[in-house]
Image 1 (cartoon, one colour):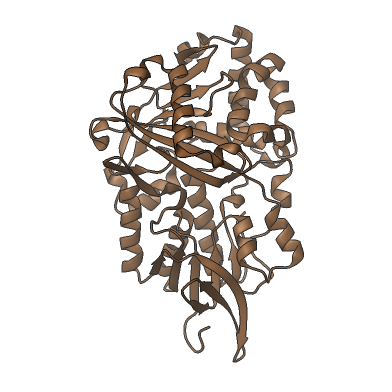
Image 2: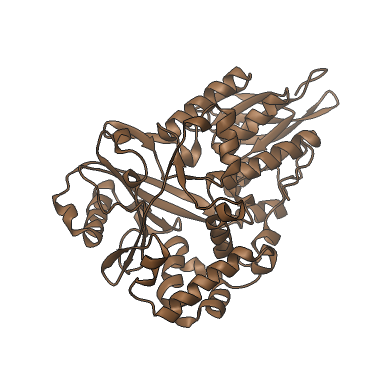
Length: 449
C-alpha cells in the first residue's frame, strides 16, 4: 500500500487484455506491475516454436474492420508493416471438399437445396442488420435459425457448425452467438469497405508480443514473467486499504489490482470474495480447445479456413495458415492448425501427444487423402481448458460485474465479451473500455457498457 504517494497498480495476466490495460494505465502516469504466470507474454496469442520456426500457438487473423486491433498495432509501430490478403474458404460435406469463397461457389455447394441456400443467405443478411443483441440473448439459437433458414438448413448446415464450436452446449446457447459471428463477418461492409481482407504482422504474434514488452518497459511497467499469482487478499493499516498479491516467490502490496484471468481462476485467487460472487464466478462455463500445429512439406488445399460438416472427425475445423501467410515465414513449408473445441471434460485433454498425432493425422487423411505423401516435419499440441465462455441463454444477466466487493479489486476478462466473439479485436475493445473506466473512477468501479 502506498502512503503519501501516487497509487500503485497490479495487472494480473499478460494476455492481450492485460498488456493493453497495463499500457493504458502506465500512459496515464500510474505505477504498474504486470504479473504473468508463463515465461512468455501473450496468453492465447502467445508464440511458440514448432520445429525450426516460431509462430503463433493458436491461429489468429486481423480483419480490415478490426479497428481496435489496428489502433493498438499503430501505437506499437507495427500497423504499417501489416500484409493484407484475400483468402479462400473450404467446405467439407458428404466427403467432398469444395471451395466456398464467393457467391457462385456457395450456390454450387453440395448438401443443401437451392431454397435452403437462399434462406441461409437471407438469414445472414438479416442478422447483419439486427442491432438488439440483448433480445437475441434470450432466444434459443435453434429457434432463431430454424425460423429464418428452415429445419432442413439448420440440420444440414447450422447444427454441424454449432456443434463444431460449442459441442453439446449449443443446445443451451442463444442466438446472440450466431448474431455476433455475422456481425464480425459484415463489419467491413458496414464501415464502407468494399470487401473484407485478412491481415497479419510479419513475424506473427512473436513480433507483436516482443514489441509490446519493449513498450511496456519503456513506459515504466514492471513486467514480471514466470510469476503465477496464487492469492490476492485485502490488507489494512495506517488508515489505508490495499491488496496483497502473493506469488510462490514473494508478496507485494498495491492500491489497485486488475485481474484479467478467467472467472474460475479469479475465484480461486481471491478467497475474500463473497459466497455470492464466488458462485457467480464459478458458474461461467468455458469451452476449451485441443489444437494441433503441423508443419508440412507441401500445401494442402489452399483454403485458409475449412468448415468440416462431416461427422466423426477428431478435429472441428482446419486452418491452413500458409494459404494466408507468406510461406517464407515458415521456411517455405506449410503450417496448418487442427483445432478440437471441447469442454474441459473431453477425454482428448488426457490423450498423449503420440495418440493425438495418430488420430489427428488419420482424420486429416480423410479430408486430404494426398497428405499421406506429404511429410510432417513437426507436430505439437496445445491444450487449453478455458478458451471462451459458452453463450448460454441470458448470459450477460448472470455475469458477475467487473467491480468486486473487495475495495480496489477489479476482474475483467474474456467473459465480459457479451456482444461479440472471442477474438483479439473484441478482447482489446473490453480492455480499452475497462482502462478508460478505471482511470475515470480511480479504480473504484468499472463500467464496460
